[in-house]
Image 1: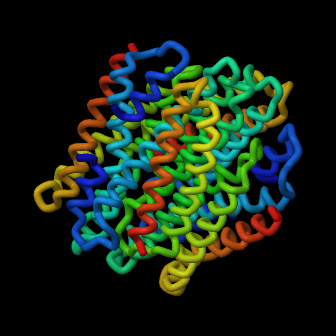
Image 2: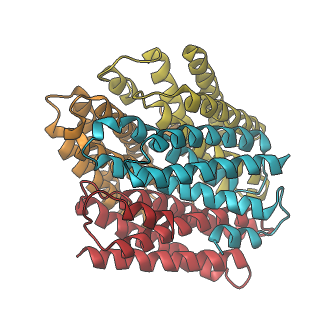
Length: 134
Length: 134
Length: 134
Length: 134
């Protein structure tokens, strides 16, 4: 069981959303931030680094946005959907854009294939959390 | 002249947006992240900390979102408006919500008054950057 | 297999350290950042929040330091031990201090017990990475 | 007056260190994080990007470490020197390493010259804060 789920299970109050959906999203966000951070580094070590600049840029954006989103969604106390919802939408957009770019390099670079997968999973998880918040 | 402006002025390529508007937004985002981080700490040192929980939570969110937003907006290379625009919208929402909360404590706590001001300025700057991006 | 390990396995160059030790540390850092972020939120929802202020503060510090450390250690390219080593030492200190504090609340609060465990594991993992770097 | 100083001046308790030295350090850390984030982007837009890989990597590290350090040093409540001091040492090391690298590109790239200056100022400010903490 991930720490995300463990921590949610010991939260002293009631939740505003299904704990299973939330824990899955938190794990997907952390995975995606990690994959994007590592993919920037992998891209920088490739010989064709000048062709990877767009991938590097979008992975940096995606890592930063996932890191902010996982912190905000991990907070239950005094939950404010007017903040969480647009942030999840921004995170979906970042994962979509980064996943699309990484997919274009997936055949040549295994690290981009793994990163694209992490982006797709995170995008999907964020969409499911938004649906569960309704 | 701030480092934000200095760095923009030495950018090797052309911009996608007015450099003055962008530098003002970057400075406002850094100011707001700083004010919110400090306001969390100020709130934690108040005697009535249990009454400041909502303020603490929203300031943490706002600091995290401003930190991500300042990183993304500072990047010009391979600029992708499909990522930047929804993130700016999420940042506007966070600044609005945090500014509203801090304003309610502005008479009792000078630190909340200063933080509310930083949130209002940042919200306004993000709106102006979005307008300039059109 | 975690994304940390997957990404390391597709790194195009050779490593400066054992990939298994590094992947374990990266996972422990991400777990600890997650546990500390959630524990701040759990503490804020407790009735005795005024008694949890030191725990909140140290968990915020530990989350921030683990987040920086996981990013730096995830980077292999142009590795610079003069940066990585003191950062790992700072991270060990943060995990130690935060773990000690959380342990004091472990009997009363299950979330502090889980967070203390994540801190201890992360501290140990960072120490092992430093040893492997020699 | 910066928000760092404004927020310190409205802190409800007494400080553990001179407020002027602390505010100067906080401003220098925010400036350095900003300069390093922008310099990564500037480097990525240069034609000789493959020669800038080490600079990119060290600027990413320095931005991440400065961001963590400015958050931790901005917190006064329940101050713990066993965490703050090694983090400041790690930050000094990151600024030193990044400043040295940027300086090597200072003649060719104005953005690296500005970033080197921000790193030197931040390194010096962190050293002065450590001295003031004694």
